[in-house]
Length: 138
Image 1 (tube, rainbow, N blue to C red):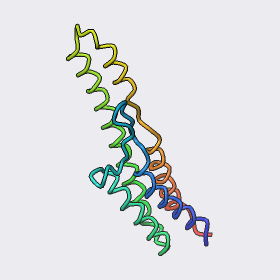
Image 2: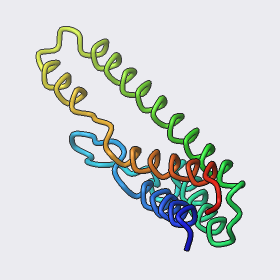
Image 3: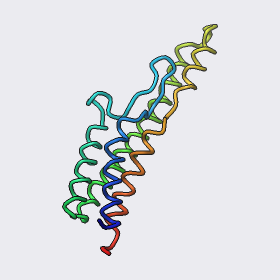
C-alpha cells in the first residue's frame, strides 16, 4: 500500500468519524454532533468520507481534491454559522433580560456554549484528503 493511499484512507476515516464527535456544547442540553441524527450537514461529510475511502481504494487520487475541498468548505461554513448563532444568542439574552435579576445566570449559561473538537477532526480529515490529492505517486 502506498503512502498516498494510506493518507487518503486515514482522511476518509476521519471524515466519517468526525461528524459523530461533539461540535458544540450547550449547558443543559449537552453535546451536539455534526451528524445530528442524520439531519445535519455532517451527513454530507460522512458521504464525502465514504467517497474519499472509495477513491483511495480505486487509486483515483485526482478526485480527492473534490472531496477534500468540499469537506473543508462544509466545515468552514459550519464554523461561521456556529459563531453567528452563538453571537445572536448572546445578543438576544442580553436584550430580553435587561433589568431581570436572573440575567447573570443567563449570561453564564450563554457564555458556557462552546464549539467543541469534532469540527477539528473533520478539518484534519479534509486537509489530509487534499494532501493525498496533491502528493505524487511513489
